Image 1 (cartoon, rainbow, N blue to C red):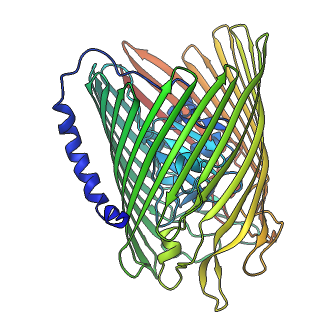
Image 2: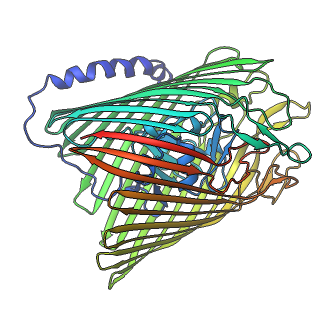
Image 3: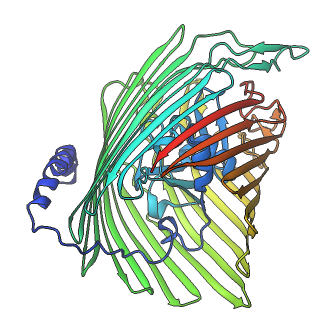
Amino acid sequence: MARTFFSFLPVIATTLGLLLPFRLTAQQPAATQQLQTVEVFGKPAEVYAVGSRVTTVDSSFLSTYAGGTLAEALQARTPAYFKSYGVSGVSSVSFRGTNAAQTAVLWNGLNIALPTLGQSDFSTLPLGSIGDVAVQHGPAGPAYGSGAIGGAVLLSSPDYKGKGLGAMLQQEAGSFGRYYSSGSISYANSSFRAGTSAYVRIAENNFPYKDLSRFGQPERKEEHARQQCYGFTQDLTWRLRPQTQLSLHAWYADADRKLQSAMGSAANQAAQHDQNLRLMSALQHSSRWGKSDIKLAYFKDYLHYGDISTSSEVDVQTYQLQAEQTYTRGSRWSLRGGLNLQHFVADNDGYTGTRTEQRAAAFALFRYNPLQALDLSLNLRHTLVPGYNPLPSPALGFNWKFYNINRHQLSLKGSASGSYRVPTLNDRFWAGAGNPHLRPEQGWSYEGGLRHLLVLGNTLLLETEATAYHMRVDDWIQWAPDDKDRWRPVNLQQVRAMGLELSHRATTTLGEVALTASAAYTYTSSEQVKVYEGRGDLHKQLMYVPLHKALLSTEATYKGWRLLSNLNYTGLRYTTNSETAYLEGFLLLNLALSKKIPIQQNTLWVALRADNVTNQVYQTMAYRAMPLRSYTFSLRFTIP
């Protein structure tokens, strides 16, 4: 019966998406009463993440670097480490010593990771198409499902604020043949909001670099890293009744890239073309039973890779249905229960035909504040995948404000959480290598920390946070050679990750000058502690996981002027699990100066950015050249 239901899920999702608007608009006319908000516990990403560390990327950085990618933003503003195959290649993330497939990426609450690989390429996620960006560090499986072992990245659609007509035009020109153009237009009244945005980014990436593979490190020029990317978003929201709202979201991205060759290797003329279409409809309804949310989504992901000897295509369609019911009683407790259904249809040159897969998950998220100074959360999720059913994943968290006197506030927080990752389609269905006997990865994590808040008058705010964590991931899936020297995925090992995260933020006002400074440091130890097949490399740091990472960012504003700085240190990283080869640490400094110029009711922003100011020679992946110092000039005009 379950299989029959899943086989009709695409039809059900499409039909509901078409009929839902007509059914709702046929109801009673809307009155002037506004839709009530039932979430009263703070930022949406933190509501049911009590005891966990949550980071939000600040809006000033997102607006200044709107022409960049999500990889660049998170590398600059969070402790995450990104491996990039050069400036035009795939960019994958590592949170708390895990790998890219162990980080969930959600758009408006739904997972957008490519099911064939189980991960997202952050270099194809442009900041100009995204609204808010938040990161939950550590396991988030009970809330967000498969893959959220190391963390979860939460994205939203662009937020078009204000009523009436609005518009934005932006033009950037930078070093190494880089150009970026974007624009948006929006309109809003009391019952309807619409916004459209589009962008084009072209970069020759013909930068000079030192060839570290040659004696004497001669200077060369990158000649095969050109990018041409474009995309658009469309967002529509109707208030159909005082308690009912319908939203439609569309996001399309197209990236055509020449892929850099590694230093010292023969040029293979590799190129990759990515096309990603994401469509979603969302219904919200408030009643005496709380808030009901129903989301229907269709994603289509296409990838073509080719070089002088090979060519491959991947075409994946994803259907998702998620229904949630949230009941909040005052400021004391909130309960959310829901169901998530997914249906994948994948065509891949590496498979022996079209492959399909269905997943179902039920979840319950509960937050309770028994005392004004104590927050508690209890979350549970259970996922069903035919043949690969992981154990239920629970999470328990607390936040206790045990000291709150004389403008000082001290909080003790902690959490214990389970997480999991279902094997990807490639892991199971790759011709001649897929392993149908894989077990899902299962992880357990514990973390605890202290947070200090100090307010001095109306001019100074100090926030300090320290978090320690310990995580084990069992049945870690890794591609490794078998006894016939064929590469196959196996449940190779158990991995232990533990570390320390420190952060401090200071905000002050001195006359007409507003100052903000943020500092962060992370220590991450990630190593194999058990090996199930082969010899393995026990008690050695996993490759491409830096032990040390530190950030220092500042912002100063004065009479329309804004100065941003970002100093980013990444420590030594091993390039093998045996610790026999490594990349040196590096320090990057980026600066941005902008000026806000009012023009009647409109605004012109003029900005100049300098990246890698100190001309640092560095690599995020072995023998992949990265650019030296570069400059970008930007103009942004907004109405009103």
